[in-house]
Length: 152
Image (tube, rainbow, N blue to C red; front, side, top):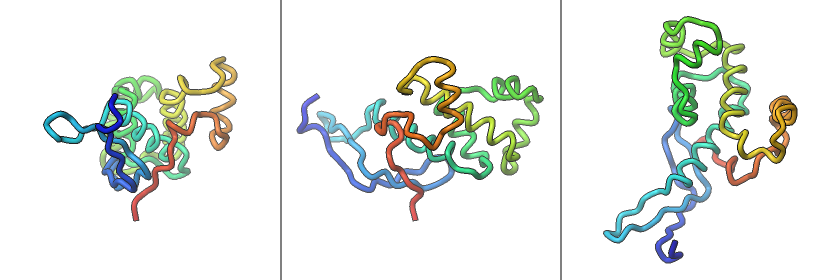
């Protein structure tokens, strides 16, 4: 891709997961008609960075955060219900408030692994499990966990 077609924005604000986020650097591509667009890779990078913050946070997931993580990982609500051995209607009830802490904790581990398993330095199953237990360690290339922050 031609470098002169790239436009770098600093401290770009983006709305995702029911919150406003600041992305320190984001790259747009200028199309022939002058419009700016994000590449799929850049969208994935930003979404992964936001997901990393959400999955590392110690609070319960809100519905908007849960919905964002489902969309980012292309996970159906029915799969979540099946995995947690709960009725699909229970997942629907989560729309009215926060998920309970134990469900949030399990889901954060699930989503984190689903997003970052391909990017972990070591691919063995026991290594992935170990990495999940130590989420605070630098297990994933910073490209995918960038330093997005909640906007003030």
